[in-house]
Amino acid sequence: MKFHQLDIDKKESIVNLRDFLKENYGGLDVLINNAGIAFKNDATEPVGEQVNG
Amino acid sequence: MARVAVVTGSNKGIGLAIVKGLSKTFEGDVFLTSRSVERGLKAVDKLKQVVKKRSFIFLIKHFSLFLCFRKEFK
Image (cartoon, helix red, strand yellow):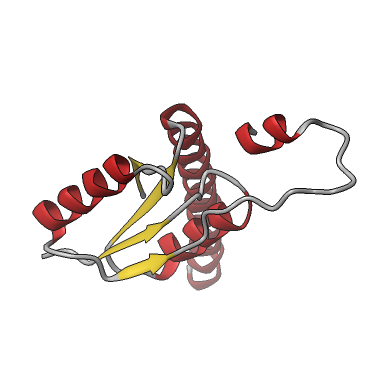
C-alpha cells in the first residue's frame, strides 16, 4: 500500500498524480472515485471542521 | 508493468476501508490518496500496522498447529 497526495479540487494536484502514474505504471487500472464530502445536518461542529477532519 | 489502483479521498471512512480490502485482493499497487499529506501518511502507517499484526497472528496460529501435529505423529 502506498500514498500519493491528491486534491480532486486542484487541477495541479490531479495533473501531478496523472504524470506520476503515467511514468511509473503506464496508466491506471482501477479507480475508486470515492472523494467527496457528506455534510451531517445535525452535527454540532461547524462546517469548516467537518471539511478538514 | 505492475498494475495500479487508486482510491480518492481514502484517509478515512469508506475510502480507507476500500483500500484495506483492495490491498488484500488486488494484485498490484494500491494507492491511498488524500488532500492532506500528513493525514494520508498517518492512515497508511495505521493500516500497515494492522496488516502486520494480522500476519503475525496468522503465523502464531499456524506454528502452534504445526507443533500440535508434530506431537501427534511422534
